[in-house]
Every structure is written in C-alpha cells, then in structure tokens.
Length: 118
View (cartoon, rainbow, N blue to C red):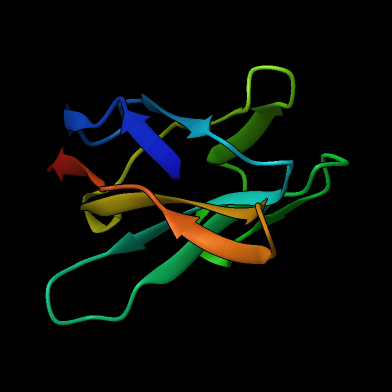
C-alpha cells in the first residue's frame, strides 16, 4: 500500500508565502514523477507543478516565477514553495506521484486546503 501525506496548507494574506510538503510511504520500488495539482469547487483538477526523478520541472503558466517545486529522492518527499500568493491560488492542493509497485500507477494524497485572502 502506498500513501502520500501532505502538510503545510493554511490561510495566508495575498502576497504571503506557504510551503507544502508531500511524503510517500509504503511498499514500492520506485517513484518517477511527483507533482502538485489543485482543485476548486465546480472545476477540474489542474496541474500546478511536476518534478521528475531526474529533477526536471514543469509549471503551470499561472504559477511560473512564484512557485518552486523541489524533491528529496532519498526522503521520498516533494515540496512546493509558494510565494507572492494571490486569491486565485485558493484551492485544495493534491500531491500526486507515479509509483512502481507491481506496475506503474498514479497515487494521490488526501489534499490540503490553501486559502489566500485579499
């Protein structure tokens, strides 16, 4: 069983910063891509940022220059540093990972709420 546990969400004023963390645990052989997605009520879940096992990153245009994704392969963790937050960043943020157990598949965390007040 693979688990992704997120932490670090909360309430912050516009212009402020938050750092999200995601820790993977359980029985598996390898993790390829890890990433963060977000979702607001009535909308589809959208990509925020991803990072591969070789540390190649990809960002949504809306967060480029403000958010930074990082990863510690030894600790099986990924983090998202969010700076200059805007009210439109308010969402539930989900950690995602492509994990190899008996086959490759996606796993999701339970989600953490980020609220940015204006």
